[in-house]
Image (tube, rainbow, N blue to C red; front, side, top):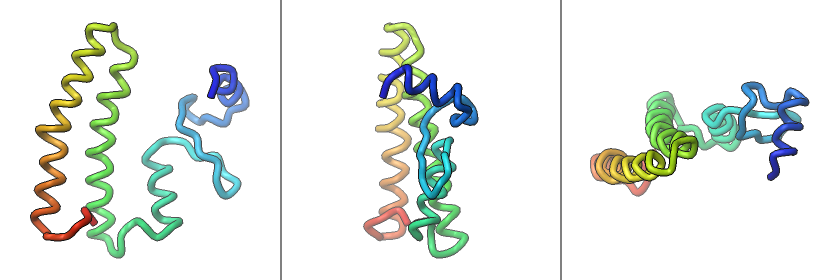
Length: 114
């Protein structure tokens, strides 16, 4: 929650790549969003029933992370560039990512992506 807590986590070596997120579960300190998501999905049997479903989950997750990365990178830009980056992220969400998920849902006629 604070800069001091973050610096302590870094100093203690709990952040492998010196960045968050950090999830503590099952006696482990997990870092890296994708690894955390994969672990939780596998642990709670939410990672697909077969290899094809797992592939679809990975594709959707990676696409979503690409969009999130655009948003996260904006934080480090100047105010003008930040505004432009957020506008681009919203545009891409509306024109690329959301339509892709809608097409997938319509394509297989289910209520969920997987």
